[in-house]
Length: 400
Image 1 (cartoon, helix red, strand yellow):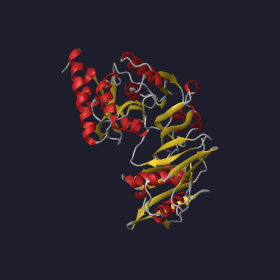
Image 2: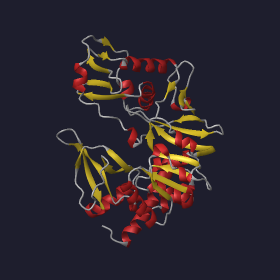
Image 3: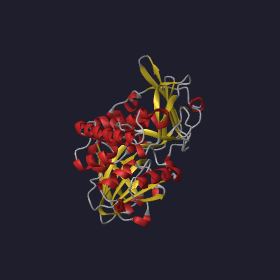
């Protein structure tokens, strides 16, 4: 156990070890960012968080155990200085860290992102001295502190939609001597009072690139954000804004996921059994197995994002061995069930959902399975097109 000043000494040692590990892993190459990791006390930004117990409860729900200094100081400090994401909030409800309780299930709505990803985001955005930066999604405030340490507090603006989260983050930032501009604001609309920015970096995901973020970026400035949707396909993109207001850039390689901006969260779709009851009895063999877009692999992760662009309102869930696709906007539905070593599909509604998935997968395979970096996103005059290999059709991102 460590107490008082001993805790701070131990935290310094753990920060140094974390920086060394990030350097060994190749997560961080810039010594200036490594120096920021060694300087910023992450434990000041996470007074409490939840970790998975590793075992589901009797209903199959994830059991989340609270971790605080009062409950187990060594566990709290060690986890804080690991390269891990720490869940700090569920279902938009701020926990009472003075008396935290074990949780069963729930949707994480705020976290302290793993340090390697935070640093990767700042590095990919090509953040340099003298740049003004807008961070969308303050969260715990740890990533904001790193940016303040690397730049100057006066050059950093960070916005957060949840006022309770921002209050906690602001207290920690100011206690540590960082004084960025902070505001309660929705990332969909950026922050006009401080615009224009040299860099915009989002720690949340969007269904499409918000017009406001482009308008608030200086010509030649860059926007780094994650695109996602209701199929939970993700892609990161680095856009450069031109004088005429066009923003364009390639998707970045790698698999990264961020929580959706709250206004764009997937809607509830009801009981899959109710949707399945309305499907016709007629079945056909599926051309592709659902694992093509649901497997835990980089290609499936990437392909799910492409499918999502073609079916922006579709959602997918699995009940038992049956995979359901549901579109709450137009009422279309499909289900896939295993049969004789293959899969059979039933579909109804104005859009044949699985048939559309098959068309995207077929085009993807025919184009040679192009990687994320072969896709270019262009945003201009409210149109957002994903351009790729000529044998694969362009995809439109959904409107805002």
